[in-house]
Length: 346
Image 1 (cartoon, rainbow, N blue to C red):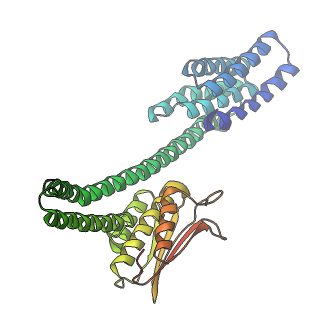
Image 2 (cartoon, rainbow, N blue to C red):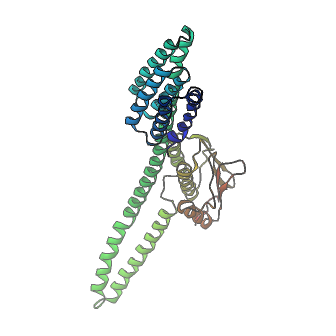
Image 3 (cartoon, rainbow, N blue to C red):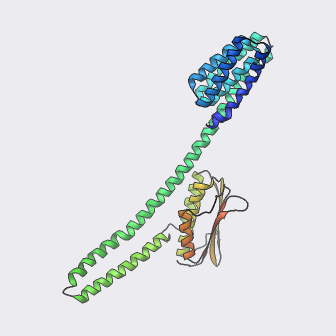
């Protein structure tokens, strides 16, 4: 059952007034109208059927005109479901016939001019308010879907960037190693010394490649702290999360700068994807070392914060001799803290 169905089905309680009137003035026609309108209302509220909505409008209009009195509440019920089910703006015009019937029923009952106006206005507002509520529900659902898509795109772009880095690092290096390995194979039978020199070159190239890969994996080839803070501001703004940033802008060692940039990227991705936060605060403190704190006002997490992104970040920080903490804050929300000794390397 959707929020609209669950939220508006209780208006069937308005049938209590026609039921009481039917008990006071029993008739087969009134009893049949009670059963028909109640059944149509509950079915329409559950299935959101436009056909049964139209039948409900006809039945409630006929009952209000035929019996008057408290039967005008059935028009209110029809207006509520019309506003809840018909989402587009022109659909609000469907409330006008129900309003006209309410005015006609009030005139026929001779309730007075002011009461006639109140009857028509009450039915129209009874449909307009649910229509506004449903529009808000739909807008919130679209915003949540957009937030999830933004997080997915951010992760995809980061994976693509990382794959490009690895291709740049290893493509040329592996090609050179293959060529030199072929030279070693050709020289080995006739010139062992030359083959040994080529093998030594392969070893050196391999060591350099390993160093470069480790640097890429630990984020040392990343965009750096300042670039990641700028990207975080844009990403949070796109997700509708207000950012409060405190950073001294002091120069950091390249390894520390890259590691904190990685921490900002992973921490902000976590905020966008999981926190449902409205605000996020990023604080950078530079002294003998450097400390980064990312805190949000979201729902926090259940269990332990051990996703792949944060788990990998923990390993890199601890490998650099730093401190890593992540978990729900006492005052609510989620808090990530990374402390790195200045110039530390993993």
